[in-house]
Amino acid sequence: MLNYYLDALKKYTQFSGRATRKEFWMFFLTNALIIIGLVVIDSSVLGNNDPQKSVLVSLYNLATIVPYLAIAVRRTHDVGKSGWFVLFPLYNLILLISSGDNNENKYGSVPFVNN
Image (cartoon, rainbow, N blue to C red):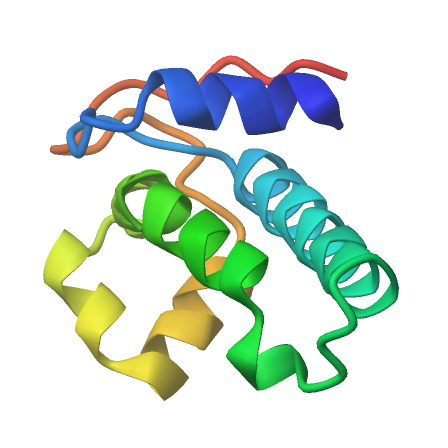
């Protein structure tokens, strides 16, 4: 799980190509777990009981917004759609849970899947 997260961070400027469904959702899950950990640290150590005002979470979100957008765009490419569909939340969710193209598409070849 951590490998998918680190790979996404390494490819933070790569908006071309494709990302598998597993690659995206493992990044998303790791991201969510880190945010939960930061909220716990912020509330227990810093005494902030309002997660919406968490400085740690805000800084973390600021640091990971570009890698998230990059992997989301690559994920939409995997289903054969333009990365601009990231701007349409409901349709984007449908694309993110859809299986990718089994063949090469205009965005690249089928991504290698690590198991």
